[in-house]
Image (cartoon, rainbow, N blue to C red):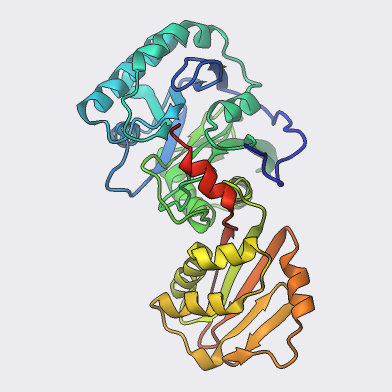
Length: 407
């Protein structure tokens, strides 16, 4: 698989989070010889928040995490790639129990204090006993500076590891947030992203973390799409070890503003990295709809444009085909007035008042479409609503990758 054109030349190790230790291993979950297991250990008192897929066919690990989350604390996270443990029935539920038991024994904690996540092929039973062969080694190899390795361990069709970090000052003291994510296909989150794990050394109660995570996800992971398909396994978890001693007591307190801005920015960074690693992608596209009846309406129209195979293939072909954008606006089912519609590709206005712009330049529009990052803006001209969704193009490589995914 060719690397994404947006893949960074190097991936630097981000700042460690005191109270978080990580280790990776090769367990042969799907293929031998590749790193496919991540274990994270958290200090006592670590709080947790999470958001999960709204799919009615959620994976067994998602169900496990939903049941464990109300306790509000966590001591360990076990993640595997290569098998989603989704649509696996009783065997899948038993695999989660075995997985949690193995991780709990290795960390000397209770199974209910373990979070689980799996990504990969749907419908294949997960051989949880494979964890037993690497668990002791994982536990003895735990270290703080392993975030980049952790990001690699959870990759499936990703072509580069996704890592981000922020350090901000809260009440005069530094607080650090570091996170990783994975995802390249089956990307149209309806809560979070495929997998994302973020930790901070701030002190925060579970309810406070939950509010901040849910609101940050709504502005980041829920605003991206690669192929319009929502995964069975989408999981985003936020852990707070409290080791900095800096407390975020309520989401609304003045000191929380910097932390929330940093969290928002970090999740948006990870979300953009996912789109830039979209399977077979060559373009990163921001679709902005403004002048809508409401922000919600703008978001629905923007997502319809961003999800359209015809729009995405036109972008892949560097074709400034605004007719496909018009089509997507029209089918979105939201209020729109054809004769007020304005469309721009980059800074080139291609359509205005329901028709081609009288000053339209094919050469100028084509030049925009040759860029690796493209902005498509639609002004409905009927209100004040505005929203942006980020997507990528749809190429022949996407078909090849997914046609061969299980083989």
